[in-house]
Length: 398
Ligand code: ATP
Ligand code: MG
Image: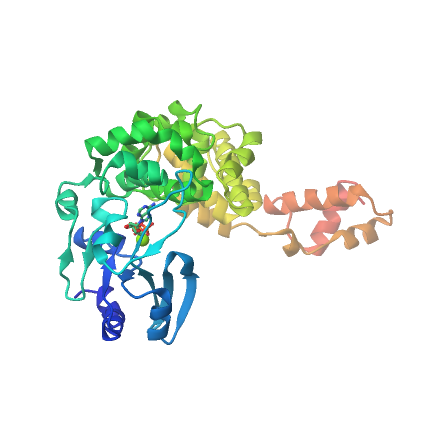
């Protein structure tokens, strides 16, 4: 069997030796059949978490109440989850209780879509109780069982459906689609973090244009944080081909497409529960794009103030908005040529300025330093102590 499954076979064998069954499940099996790159391998087993922990030397409890134990094996980590059913759901959200079961079929039945309900044994044989292989071949996203019931049980599945449209380029099967339309309001009951995780995958998917159109067509965007008034912004976003944008750049493009005023961007992204640091990054990218739009090239001061990473992102987003090809290399070259990259690199400090002037310290010092910094960055002044002193005299600042 091919990697990365081959390396995980000993895990299945160890579990079997202890008298239980174990299979590869979830996205890895789906992506293997689609011949796509595989990120993480999930294993499902009839052994309970306690039994799994007794089999392996090195394990970490990462979600034991849901039956998941992380197994560390040959420097790799694998999530091993006990077969389970999720019968009772509370408020259309997470299951109230998970019941561990000993049979694979019951576990596969609680999974969201037929393509995600496939299992594979250690020999590479596929176990397909719900016609997942046919749906994969037809590029169809179909719920396991009644779409209406499955979406009412866990509304996040609707969001997952559209994100799989984006990442796989598949279509929603007819009943699955009409059930999204009928149940979309239930998305408002879902924890935002879970929605955001799926939405970010959607933003990065290759078929995002298709997925965004589907969000508009089904009107699910009306039930996502802050998006209700932004049908046109979403449609505009869907027209851009933004293949190599990273997630913060995608958020920037989304906010620009929706014409969110700068003072509202923080609140918008807070509603999506983005971490503060990422909010700042997105805000800076947007600012850098608007500066870039005012000029033919990046000014030295903009490169200096924004820093290389933001300027590179800004260039990428700017180029998409202006339908030009991004010239990230020129941005990097221009940045490398800046005489200084930060204030700390100035050959003088506030103390020198005060000493030279003989004047008491005050706000004027900060202003003088800012002027020096500006002139050095723009190469109107050499970053040398003597030159700076002369320059200050010339401008009567000391
Ligand atoms: P990716 O490759 O993007 O990780 P994935 O299908 O592996 O896609 P995960 O979120 O990692 O998605 O979930 C692993 C598996 O767990 C899924 O393939 C599916 O079988 C099941 N699953 C995940 N979320 C749900 C859900 N909300 N309802 C039912 N089954 C789910
Ligand atoms: Mg996965």
